[in-house]
Image (tube, rainbow, N blue to C red):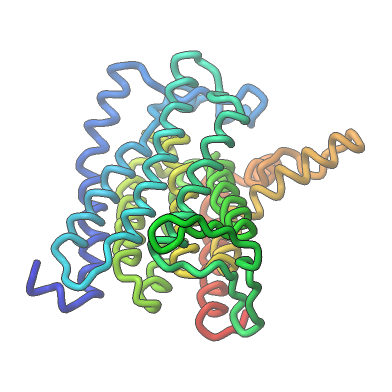
Length: 348
């Protein structure tokens, strides 16, 4: 491992492989345990009727995803030279805390036998707290500047309203940037959660997003973050082996909420806060479809989509589940390429 530390690209691919191997090996045992304990997904009654057959499918696969990517990232980073560990530790901490929030939500669903777990207010409060703490830590300990970058366009300084607390060298609270980061991370967390409604959809799109973010992190000399992105991608690959249609296990809120948080947190560390909205554009579109549906229905009593999120609308239009997943993954790949191009060349 020490000999390979001079080859950062090898380290990233190693992180992918280790996480993938852990997920593929552990998941069959996890699935058997969940089946033995009769811990399964509760399907929403108002969803597509064809989904009712998924009732009872093992859930909380996100536990294994989190295990695989955390172990892989820490092992590879720990044996690598000249890597700044604090940024990746902060991202891992935010990811695991959100994963714990999602796990509580999943457990609540299972034991109360309903498709809704924690109340929306409780879940959102937890996401906001995690996002605020991550932002403050990133600004004060990882030298993240409170500005947002629009490649080839310009920057917006969100540090103009900053309070400095006399602790150590001064603990800064850039209020506007904290609000922005909180909206970004909590929003992305919920967006991935809303996307997680079809077999392989959220996992496949997060995989694509993480590969693009790994390239951005690598190019901006954030090697520890690149390793984490690689580990997350590898964990998604291992999970997808068991999550493709018809799924043997779902990631649950444990996986979807935490992976969304990870995407947002990575964007903050790599200063790709705006570009990630393009790279993860599919998640944004899914969330917007729900917001539009709710707002329009409340105001007019009419529905814009046959069903929200948008992937259910496509099902209602007659697309099969594998068709929806494959085509939306292609769209996600295109958006990932556009975001990548914008970040590095300033061109969409």
